[in-house]
Image 1 (tube, helix red, strand yellow):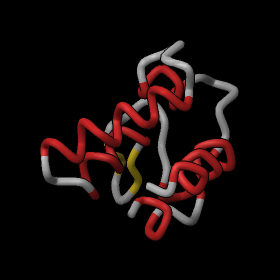
Image 2 (image 1 turned 135 degrees about the vertical axis):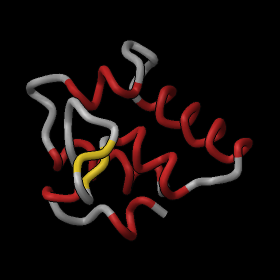
Image 3 (image 1 turned 120 degrees about the vertical axis):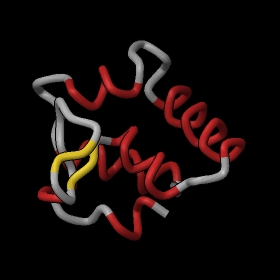
Image 4 (image 1 turned 120 degrees about the horizontal axis):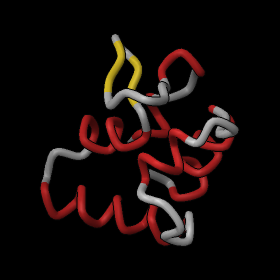
Length: 79
């Protein structure tokens, strides 16, 4: 699960799918969940939680977004 791996701010990034060993939320979803059906399920779960206002990348990359907000979402959704 993402929550078991993405524990430090340096493991998260904005503006890039992957940057070194860091990933944006979408990058982590693709990294951790390799089954296409599971990826779709997890992406929908995230979109529902962020009220589908943005795409996941738009939500992740919002300039005011913090690692804590992303981490809290991942933990809350148990992904």
